[in-house]
Length: 104
Image (tube, rainbow, N blue to C red; front, side, top):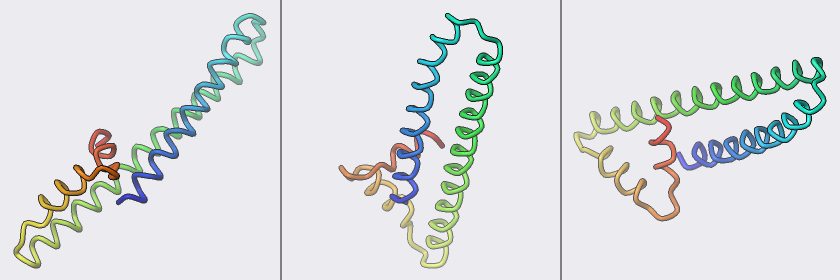
């Protein structure tokens, strides 16, 4: 789970830096009014949007998988491990699990 969360945070940082760079390019393109550059900028924003959607899909699929694994564990061992696990991991000072819960 933590690997998934760390991957998510890393990808968020990459997307944020790409958006920041595009914002800087946006300012210069508006001053120059070159239509070719405007089209390139639009495509770059579109690519970031598609990457963001892929990242959200990745998070959703992994969250569903984790829920299913924990549910199967609970059923097999007749123990409510899911609540305990999520509570302890989410409140751990080094855990980034809350980050995933916010997205899902």
